[in-house]
Length: 249
Image (cartoon, rainbow, N blue to C red; front, side, top):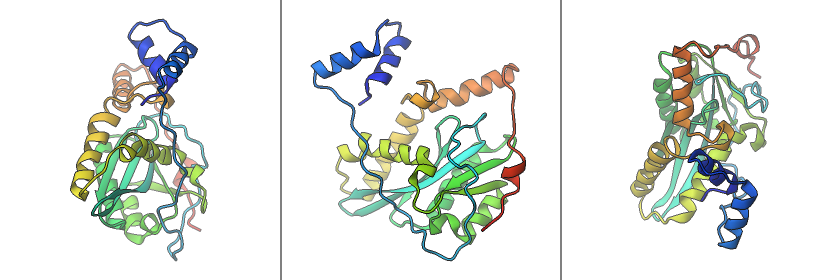
């Protein structure tokens, strides 16, 4: 359930003149409250011998256009058959989930399939892509890094054990869990994956408003950007220099 800020934004969008304090008071009076985020728990293994990249993003969670910065991470979802692992790729500009894949194994192939989907979404767009992830073995693997290079993407990795370096991606997975996973019991992995599809493709990207992008949906943010670009109402600035010249440590 939305909290008072988002409910206020939706009411104002529909023409209602109402203060957030009023919405908060009415919610309290009716026993309504948004669900809180549970404590972060690491899901990937950073104890490996693969090279890791420096933290180029460095918690600068700002992008000037779609397809400029991608965030990637893995989370896990319980079912009666066992865990389902979800690899997601989020566009920092619109907060849209542009790539995802779910399966029974937390493998590099799972992450590569999510990356492939994100790359297809981005085709025909200009500029360098900064790809940020944690230091997990899936993302540091030679296969994944080779795919990043093939797609013209520059790698950035969080500091060891610092979930705040990938906060936007962590936030999406927390939202997914409190709005879907914690409210349902999945008897099979197939059922969980179907519900994940519905949540991301029907609800999150298309209908759910996001406070970080002006209480708009990710699809609306992306669409409005390209409409403005066609009209010449936006300036496109590409990240260069440091992002294109990252050293592997």
